[in-house]
Structures are given as C-alpha cells and as structure tokens.
Amino acid sequence: MRAVSAPDHVRSQYGGSTRRRMFSLALPAVGEQLLNTMVGLADVFLVGNLAPRTAALLGYDSAAALTAAGLGNQFSWIMMVLFIAVGIGATALVARAVGARDEASLVRIVRQVALLGAVVGILATALGLLGAELFLAVLNAPQETRAIGAGYIRITALTFLPTALLLAITACLRGAGDTRTPLLLMLVVNTLNIAVTWLLVNGQLGLPALGVTGAAIGTTLARGLGGIAAVALLLRGHAGLRLVLDWRPDPEMLRRLVRVGLPTAGEQFIFQAALLIFVRFVTNLGTTAYAAHNITITIESVSFLPGMGYAAATGALVGQALGARRPDEAERSAYEGLFQGGLMMSILGGFIVLFPAQLVALFTNDPMVVAAATPPLRAAGLVQPALAISFILLGALRGAGDTRWPLYSRLLTTWVVRLPLTFVVVGWLGGGLPGVWLAMCTDFTLQAIMVLWRFSSEKWKKIEV
Image 1 (cartoon, helix red, strand yellow):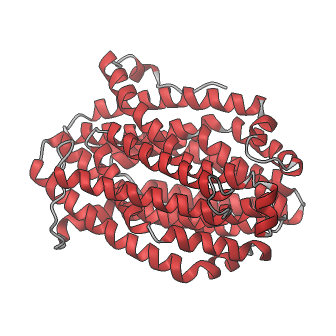
Image 2 (image 1 turned 180 degrees about the vertical axis):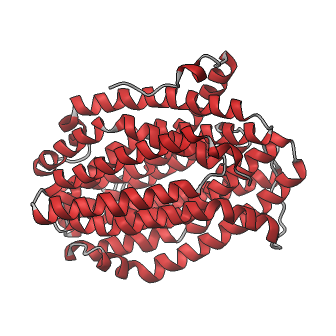
C-alpha cells in the first residue's frame, strides 16, 4: 500500500520548517486520539474477557457484554456529534484569530465556545437519561442486551456536560497550536478510566464485579474529571487563551460558531442516522456477528488514529495560514499532513491485512467471534489509504471553514451508496458481515475521491468565517 503525497508543484515548495512544524503539532494530536480511543478500547477489552465467575454472577457472557457496551457507545458517539460540531467551529475561529493576531476576538470566541458546549452537554444528558430504551429499541438490539445497554447509556450520560466542555476546550487549544495539553488531559482521562474499569468489570481488590456497568462507571468518572481539569486550565489562562466566566450570549460570535459548526453537525447526524439503519442490518445477523463487527470497528479505530491526529493538526495550520493571508502556506501544510499521516495509516493497514485473526484474539476469547471478524478486518486494512485522504483533507477543509462540502459528500456516499448497497448485498443476497464491510469500504473509497476533488479545486481558500 502506498500513501498519497503532494503533487510535484506543491512538494517542491516544502520547506523543512513546514515539515517539522506539522510533525511536532501532529504527533501529540495522534497521541491524544490514541488515548481517547483507549477509553473505548479498555472497555471492549475488559468486557470482552469477562471472567467465568463474573459471567455466572451477572447472567450474561462476553458476546452479550460486547454487544451491550457497543450499542451504548453508539449512543455516546451520536451525542458526541454535537460536541464535535462545537469543536470544529472553535478550532476554525481560534486558528484564524491566532493567525491574524486578534487577541480581543480570542477572548470572545473562548467564552462563547464554553457557553455553547455547556448547552449541548446538558441537552445530551437529558436525551441519554430519558431515551436509552427507545434508542435500543430503534436499533432492534437483542432483547438480552437491552437492560444492560440502557444502564450503560444512563451512567455515561451523567457526565456529558463536562465531556462537551472537554472536547470544546481541547479544540480551542488545537486551534491555538497547542496539541500537547490535550494530550496530557487525555492521559489523565485514560489512566483513570483503565484503572477504574479494571477494578470494577471483574471485581479486583475485593471490589464488586459489575461487568458492563463497571466499564460505564470508569468512562464516566474519567471524562468527568477531564472536563473539570480543562475548564480549570482555561480559567487560569493557557496557550494565549483564557475563559472568562461571563455567560451572556454574544449573538455575532455565536452566529459565526454555528455557521461553521452546524454543517458538521448536519453531516454527522446524516451519517449517524444512516448508521442506525446500518447497525440494524448487523444486529439482525445475531449477537456473534455484532460482537465481531464491534471488535473490527475498535481495531480499525486504532489504524486511523494518525488520520485523526493529522486532521486536527492540518486544520489548525490551514486556519492559521489563512488568518495570516497565506493561502499557499495553507496548501503546503495540507499536503504535508496528507503525506505524513497517509504513510502512517498505510503501514498500519498493511499490518492489519497480515495479522487480522491475531488482532481480534486480543479482544475476545470467543473463537466464533474471532472467525467472524477476520475477513472484515482484513478489508478494513486495505482501505486505509482512502481513509487517510478523507480524514486529513477533510481536516484541512474544516480548518478553512469549508464545512458544507463534507455535508454534501457525506449525504451522497452514505445515503445514496452505502445504505442501498447494504440492502442489496446483505438484505437480498445474504452477504452477511462481509457484505456489510463491502458496503462500508465502497463508501470510504468514494468519499476519498470526492474530498480530493474538492480540495484540488482550491475553493476553500476563499471561505470567510
């Protein structure tokens, strides 16, 4: 597999400073994404390896635990859409203000980001507490997993407010060019989550064995503490940013944040709505198939961590360059991010293709789940170069404030391609879990082609935020 690099006319203009700056900014961002993903990985690993005594005590096995936790996390990710949308607007506006050296705007932006984050966090908490059972019913979750999954959702919903603030504040920091502090915050979150989850899932050191509920408690405590720490940091001032406790709305600044972030929210809601239908195809295949699918997604999420980290770094550098009125530097940064991140993702993809069964076996001791997950995981490895293009160039577009195009492309690839193809291959032809992943990989590839075309058009250079 070969990573995509910049065209010759762009690559020849690379300076060593651009390469070093991209690497120094992206590496902590990749580490942050790794630690963020480890919160979910720890849950999957521990609930996927329930001790026999825990399974007997709680009345469910590892496959049921994986399914319940996976569906519960599905709800969390849908709520994260709102938090991510706030963060996209925050990164774009902060980066522009930093590039333009506009300190007065920075104060206004941070204050309104915190206000907007608090509002969406409270809304997400209410939805989690009141709609857990309805959500699982819509997904047609296996009956034996619904009560477990609903409990997981309710517990994690308790700290959606600090989680929203955590993601909003770290987005501001990345826009200001500080990717190390978000890394340290996620290190605290991850360490606490692993420790508490390990103690409570199988009942270590004399504590009760709580299974999926223990994993939910670990995630909740960790993200809650992370959000509190992030707020405390900006109240003191950090990386040129300061949070002023003034909760009065600033209509003009809120309008700018919403204008940039709302298309991202729309994009992700379109995707998540389609995913609800998509997941129903998987749950209809049975508990083993869903457990295999969940593990495949989890392992794949590690492989595209470089893409997520480089997307964050690329978005920040593109936004700062455009704020400084240097569009050529913005383009060089985007292609450098694609080169570095794409190379990393291609290497990880090759490793997945070569050792899929061994990787799955790290997360479950169920041989049927291992066998079911191996073919889709190999497909996930093959599609990593396309995912690199999508992740990193979408990060560049969002950093420029061009958030409508990702919305349009997501609508096309997910609703016009992935869902109909899944219906035909899985619903009509009985393609099973491999058919599900065929549709996903087709979606990813088409998305990469469309994003590359949009970036090459250079229309993003003229976006005003």
